[in-house]
Length: 261
Length: 279
Image (cartoon, rainbow over all chains, first blue to last red):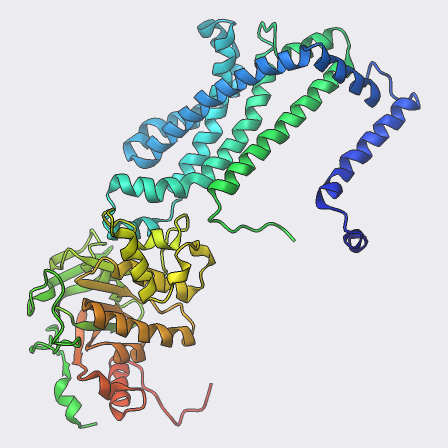
């Protein structure tokens, strides 16, 4: 079968779309045939026209923009904090003793369990949403960056030392570039987590944003709006992932990795 | 075996290491001016009472070693005899070593693996740690040209073959104009053909730059073909110290090569039997 497809010279991206296309086709069929109650799941055509309406009247772009801002601020603070902590505890034994055990403990807490406390501390405004995202995304960045710093090949460090590199030059030329792949893995996780936490964070007294849009839709039983929101998240996920891949391709061009057969 | 050679060979009895008492003639052209800062006749390496144990297991036991400026010394020993430990001690890579070790500041190490930074292009690897200046890039380019890799300057290390990577490591060491070059079995992982080529290259480069060299190897042929003097390390001591004489007498085809080879192999506890059936 794969031979046949190869011979037909179907582009790779076409082949990758085959699975989702089949799913959508079944969904459309089930809706048209009446097997699927719109209260359970709206039909693809309804979802499409609702999507067009939501974009047209500005509700979706507005909600998206509010949410994107929250996510970007959260990512900015979270990634910065995770990276700084990882570098400090990765480079210094004292830093590790002070930071690592605390972070390792905190990361075992379910992040949403912090919501009540955070509401008491930070109120129910923008801050709590951004802080919740920042806290959640800092862990994967910290953990992956820290272990990547500690995983830098001791032999390379030693060789660089014999060539007279001081501590700062060693960190800049050997340790940080060596830890970069691990940092990017952490970044990838953190982008996924940011959207995950956003949806929950926006149930805290939000009057705007994607989470609010979905809550409202649930209250009115608008499954079409819910699906539009889900598709939007899907697109955002793909875009985030593509962004990290682009970063990897540019920053890690020195690596030649296995890309499948 | 009672030949001229026997008189040159000093076998240490007991715990006293035999150090060749006479200055060994330098291989490089005496007409050539010496390298910057080097005082002729001053030893490049002078180490006394070098001792190192790992959890009570003594690897180096009060060992003495001298290397004259510009001298090429090969260090042989069975595996686990502490050859690399001695090299690391001289290179300042071992904090646990005890003894009086005097080595030049300008030293460079080539390890068994090339140890190139994979995220830096070949040229950047070569000039790593050199003070940045107007001439740095040219120096790096020259060093790469010397090892025949001028056209690989922009390549990533991962794209190089084993031999090419090791030549880059050699360029990276020599670009610093070291007074002491420490080679830790740098050809061990290369295939036989590549190794022969790299041997020729190393001889040419060492003759041109004139550093003192300590080559750690388990390959007796390599030691005889490259060095001015061969040391054998046994049970924490230099048990044999053999000056090899003029390089020209030591081609693989010469009788002296075979003679040196069997003496060194015997010291290492290996006896070749030509009549032995092939395994």
